[in-house]
Image (cartoon, rainbow, N blue to C red; front, side, top):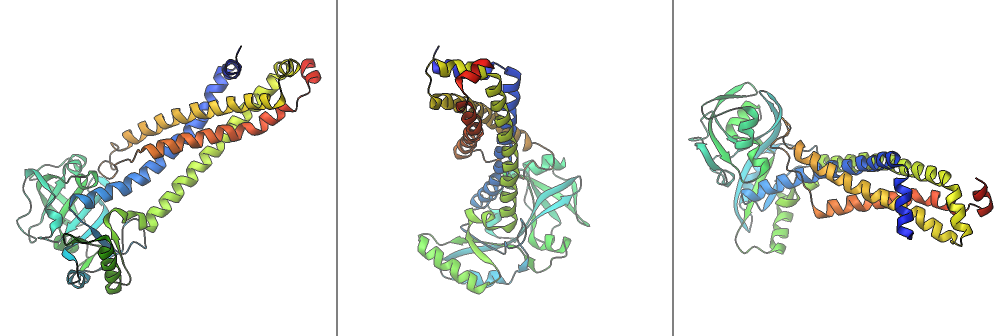
Length: 371
């Protein structure tokens, strides 16, 4: 009988207990994958959205929640005159309740601005101008709202007409309601206010020149911040809070997994007192006994980690189709997240086995054989 065989036999001796312990770890790891995947996915979705309409720099005040604070639209005029700026456009982006949905992204875009150019018409048309009470829906938003071209759509107290269904080139864009900025400002009583300015750089602008421009923008707009488009959500205090909550909740679930594995391994040691005594009497060193228990614990962690990753990935895939979330979330499932999650599970397994392994190595062969 090999060393590995003895380790595996220790795990299958009580299959129900082993499976329940493994599932305890799996639930903790699944929570890590889902919570962190949601947070990263929300950031990635926004980054992809800015990339879709070729935005290089985003200006906003992200010191509040997930969405930036509003500010006066006159700031755009000052930014437009700065060196290395090719074009600018103003936006309002808000998560709002619209008709049957408790939360959907609504984007008011400056009429004639480059942010409209990335919308590919699938059905209907774009608004004729910014005086028309018309909206365009990303195709995911159209499905969630159950709307087609020609249907009415009410935003706050204002009724609009759906004139087009579009592909925005990113999940967040496809889950968005698009409307002319002036019409959304009127509907939400935010006349003269925006919360984003998108900036396109002139061709050939270097990273250092872009950095200088962002510093100049922040001089013009001290209460705001200029950021590369792919870093916008990462600077949000709201997103940072979501990240912290995700890891804190995951840590709690993992801690419960640690206690479960430790309890299982201690029970295993107590039940195998005679076996361990025989192995010691046969000449096994105490260090080898410890390695046996630690390896069993590590296997439990590995199995729980792999199972948890599969559960988490499956949960994320299902979550993006939940009504009210569809179009807001593009779960981020990366090799680093999967590797980190399995690594956490292994650490949980090894850490949980340290005390039971130490206890097993302290057994006296004589007492063990009498047990």
